Structures are given as C-alpha cells and as structure tokens.
Length: 345
Image (cartoon, rainbow, N blue to C red; front, side, top):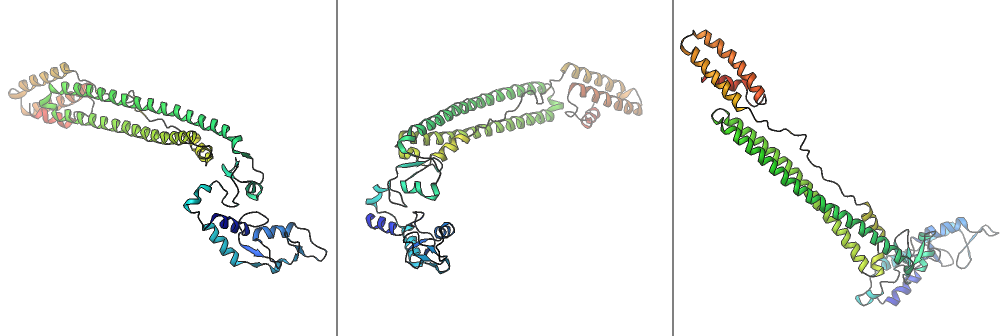
C-alpha cells in the first residue's frame, strides 16, 4: 500500500481524544467515533448541558451515553492498519512514528524509546521526561561508555581468576603426584603384605584428584561462560557506541540494566589445609614388629603346647593391631588381615 494513502487512512482512524488508533470504537449519533475508554472518560468529566445531555468533543452535539453503538466497520479497518507493513521502497521512512506518521524527534527517558510530538501529548507519555535526541545523546553515550568500562574491568578480573584456576589445577596435580610417589615408595617395601592396601590408597588419591580437578574444571567452565556473557554485553555496547545515535539509544534501558545487574561470580576453591594427608609409616618399627613376631613363631612353633601358641597368637594379634594403629591409620590394616597374617607365620 502507498505510504501516503496509508498515513491518510491512519489519520482518519485516529481517535480525536487520545490521538491513537481507535480501540473498541464507539460512534455517536452525530457520526463522530471515539475509543470506548476515551468517550467514557469524557462522559464523566465533561460539562453537562442544561437538558442533562453530554456533548460530542468534536461538534458539541448532545448525545445520550446509552445510545452509543460499536463501530465494527472502523474496528476492522483499524485491525487491518495495525497489520499493514511498508513495502521495501518505503523502509527508508521507518523514522516516522508508526501511530501518527510524524518524525521521531523526541526521546522518552521513562520508556527509553523514540516518540513523535503527538506521542508526547498522549496519555501514555503524559508526565514523562522527553528530550530532543541531540540533548540526550551525549548523556547516554557517557553512560554506555561507563558501563563498557565497568564490564572491561570485570572481564580482566574474570581472566585473572581463570588463570588462577588453571594455576591452582596444576598445583593440585603436582601435589597429588608427589603424594602418589610417596605412597608408591612406601608400599614398595611392604608389597607382599600391603599390596591391596596400596591400591586402595591410590584409588582414594585418584578419586580425590578427580573430584578436585572436576570442581576446578567446573569453576573454570563457569568463568568461561561468564566471560562469554561479558563479551556479548561489551560487543553490544561497542556496537551501539560506534553506530548512529538511533542505534545507540534504541532500547538503551534494557542494555543498561543488563550491564548494570551483571555480577561476576567467584569460583569456589578447595582448601589444602582442610584435607586428609597421607601419613608415611615408620618402616623400622614395622620391620622390628615383624622380626619380633618371627622370633615368637620360632619359639612357640615346636617347643610349647598348642594351646600356648594359640594364647600367644591372640596376644600378638592384639599387640600388632595396636602397633599398626600407631603406624598407620586404623582403617588401613584391619584386625582380620593381621589375624590372617599371623596364621601364615
């Protein structure tokens, strides 16, 4: 549809009271049509004539509120107008107000969008702070630049935290590797008796390493996601700052709010002080205990009656378990394992 005809038709379908396209249009007996809400409000506020009748806002003809009729024909035309789109050749006229066809020369701070002079006088923008584009361009440019600077600072902080996480991951891997070597060296001298226990310790360390590195990788991943959000926000701000004033101010409140409310979440870390550390057993005490057990086995093996040997085994079973508890953690070598070991002596 030709833009001139479209604008003329919109003008004819505009409510004389609110200057917007008609909404639920009602026609008076004089032929003038208004929005239902507008004519109802006019009825409540208008002066009542001497005959107790209200007057049309356009021609001052008297009317009775009860005889207002819905104008379905105009309602259908308005619906068609709202759905109408400009042709490609008319896209250059998008700087015109869709409602009134006037140039968008004003900026409403409350709504953060461009309006025309008729919009400024409408009920929707009544009492709002409106300015010419040129009057607010520098102000919002400074605000957008400040927002970009804040996000850049947060981005630098995020990159620093990301580097720290990677460094901490390496530190943890080195720490676990050192402990792994200690465990391997320790159990090398006790392979025959404690081979299975060594594997359990290694599995615990491996699980601890995996859990800690998993947490650190998750923290790193979260930082990467936050960095992506920051980059997107900064890219949009840079795009607005480098573009035209119209592009910069379009939905500026939304990008300002998103950049303002963005909060960089610090990743959680694992304290090295609050963890279990493998205690190296005293091999000399272990060998001494085993030598004593060997001597007892030799002494009681043939010379003494069988019931004496059983009593001694029970005694040394308790003795060795107590000794093992001092050298190792109590859970590493169970009393059942010691009993089996003594039976093999």
